[in-house]
Length: 391
Image 1 (tube, rainbow, N blue to C red):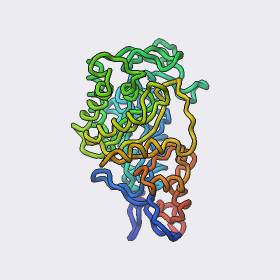
Image 2 (cartoon, helix red, strand yellow):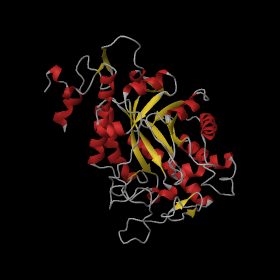
Image 3 (spheres, one colour):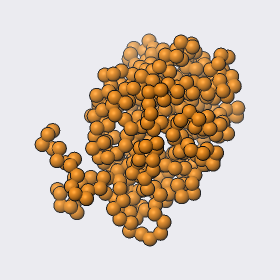
Image 4 (cartoon, rainbow, N blue to C red):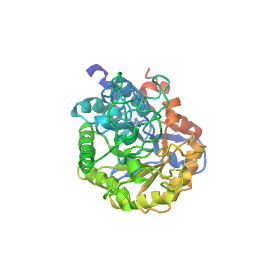
């Protein structure tokens, strides 16, 4: 590869992908393409690639697919790219094909992705995850499976199932197994697994650590009174149900001084469940624990929830938190499909960053599309810049 290193050398005056070269319109400067700092880390714009499971791993290892998948987002100039939910233990995978970070052996393949991102001056994070009662399911593309609707049993002939454990012995739906309730020792091991996964993330060189407390997975189910029925100090009151989140954040912070983000489901959409007011209280608590950013998603913890999704439907949840916190940054996510909508969210101070998902799956160079929609000319990889006659 030595002879190709010149591709990464920056000519005089070269600007990294995603930075503004020229504004072609008059009026307010688009906030979506202004830098923002998370602690000491500066993102060149507020376009964030949301963590999205691809179910393309074998025994948790990142592959060439992941390198090219995330590499495309990096080359598009996104300010931050977040690698998909990565299981902190083998048993806490959503499916047998999840990405993992439970072993030191996973570090080198993840480091390849991180190193590539840094060559294009992109910041990159990783989402640490535990599936809980939603573990041991099939990926959505296997045998026409209905994602997260059926457990693969531990004695399944395929070998793709295992024993499921959760915060309480409550199944997500009638097609999934009742999980084994985690003991205090199990919880202590899980907390330590998050700490060890953070250390591995540091070894791989990630810029941001993201914790997955959303969508009904283990840490999300621990927060909700509908799924956490424990009678010890990890259940009952808000403080009890928050304790696991707090202990994990403290464990991660004991080894990580960089940007730390948390994704939650701000509303469970079910009577007696987790609400947006609970999310505000949660946000105020994690602000005290030195978390830097909260990503505001919703749903996923109850199979009985009826969710009406439409463009920007989750933005009010982000705004509710944004009005309540003092220093915690807020990320809006969910069916934000174009630059005008994203810009309006930022200009109206309803959030500080925008996390895009499906837009990048449809077009890996979605950052450039957003810039075009805002009538901006932004830098992109010099290898693709025909105006410079480099190719």
